[in-house]
Length: 267
Image (cartoon, rainbow, N blue to C red; front, side, top):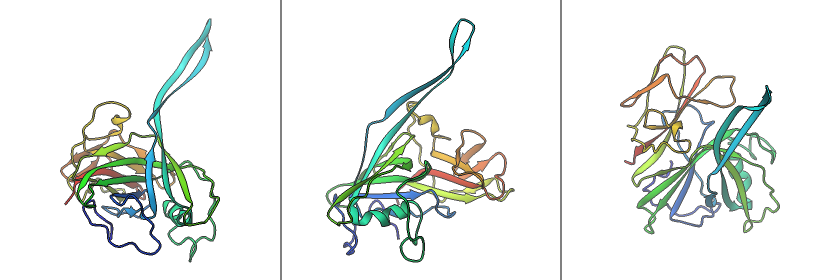
């Protein structure tokens, strides 16, 4: 059972080494099976999750015309690096969970590489609480995290290792009493309305950064992922939200994954 933002954390199991006991880190796995609310994975072996400031980038391409070069296009975007620090002895199992290798090391894969694709595999939710280890202060969301390469030099339990990741979307801060919900539905070629298991809370859009990724003023993102695609496409149009009904103008094709990240008031 997933730990909620207000649950008191219980006694540690022998393989769970935790510092910063007033913070709960968990992630929403993008490869999870379809569920109207995907159960987040508690990051119990993690010491800390930290991030760098947003880095703004500008890219331009030119083509020659007439007497000189003229811009073909320009694009501004942002990224921020994320560091997940944990004990080295726990890193392989934790990494396998990020890669969705649930049975790695037992009945599944015997080895995984320390080189990774550039796919967004998970969204981190860091939940900060008061010293009573229970009262929610606020949360930080790092969406669409991409794992980056890192060295794993020692398997010793007391040696720390940092798994680096990057996100190309704005981090989000949640007010006390709110939490993220990641939902996945399957298109069948005829269904246009998908029912969310919660009432999405309104988001404060300041129209800065990549806040225009937010859709319907109540969803951090809504994606459609065709069967042959590696990643889902963020939708900006062709969808509507009334109450808990997320409705497409055209029914998603058979096999399409509908992925929605929203925010709800904590029960």
